[in-house]
Amino acid sequence: MSDAVASPWNNDHSTPFVELSRADWAALAPTTRLPLRETEIVQLRGLGEPLDLGEVTDVYLPLSRLLNLYAAGARQLHRATSDFLGERAQRTPFVIGVAGSVAVGKSTIARLLRELLARWEDTPRVELVTTDGFLLPNAELTRRGLMDRKGFPESYDRRALLRFVAAVKSGAAEVRSPFYSHLSYDIVPDAQIVVRQPDILIVEGLNVLQPPGPGHGLAVSDLFDFTLYVDARTQDIARWYEDRFLKLQRGAFSNPKSYFHRYASMTESEARSRSREIWTEINEPNLVRNIRPTRSRATLVLRKDSNHAVSKVLLRKV
Ligand SMILES: Nc1ncnc2c1ncn2[C@@H]1O[C@H](COP(=O)(O)OP(=O)(O)O)[C@@H](O)[C@H]1O
Ligand SMILES: CC(C)(COP(=O)(O)O)[C@@H](O)C(=O)NCCC(=O)O
Image (tube, rainbow, N blue to C red):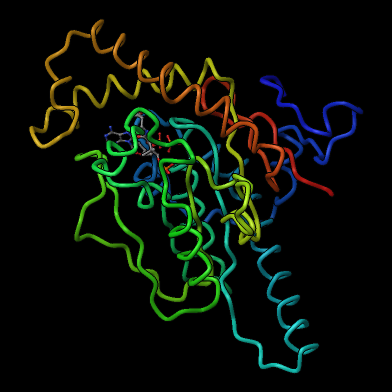
């Protein structure tokens, strides 16, 4: 992989991953039937994402099969551990983390996995939460001088996120997550997402693979059963970010309630240069300093090409 990150694996030519080409990966689940129609796939696509039937069949269907196997394995292990302890096994959700840069397409992948996994008969209830709900409100970010660090690890209430996932994982009947609005660019004070004892919980966000900070016993990444890192070349992600910003400028930003409404009247070249500023000042440094260094902690890495198609899959073998 390019955009290399220092890790113990880079120095001795060994790697914790087995690397599969797209074709080899696609051949791994040949008998799994695609449970989604093209129209359903179109509805799951994020802005500017060219997801199609071929991509879902080749890449995401085998992935949903693998996740289904891991979830069944985790249930068995949980039962065996409960037997060992002489306890009655209580079913706990299988928790999946989805990490990667801003604009890499995590949300589309997380939404698609939710649909695919819910169609396996042993895991019909799949919930999805995004970590933006755990961003500190803008007033607090401003107080801490972090408004231009939104998305950096320190811009989140990490303890609240950890408590939320721990509560879902321990089987609590109902757990609530705060809600972040891209329209107002802030936490919505009275809105919440309610999670009720799912079979699978998907937690999607930039920083879900971060290790615990100094003096912290546990990070949310310690609670995941499986983690996915969505990877692509920095220059490709930068272009996707800019193209999406242009689409948003012509669409969502024209809403007077949008935090970015002031950008709606910009010319195309002004909008491009503003989006490049946001990318180079906030999102790229966050990718390079905080997000990409967590890639080697993932169970599985999806490597996207410049057209968003996955070209390689890396699966952790140790
Ligand atoms: N300013 C914005 N206004 C409205 N929607 C946005 C804005 N920025 C991002 N989004 C949407 O929020 C979701 C998450 O985006 P992002 O954090 O960049 O992750 P990713 O592109 O990896 O899914 C995407 O569906 C994206 O289209
Ligand atoms: C809301 C986000 C921090 C992503 O949050 P996540 O759900 O990944 O935790 C990101 O989409 C964002 O808005 N970043 C701020 C810089 C920008 O406007 O691009």
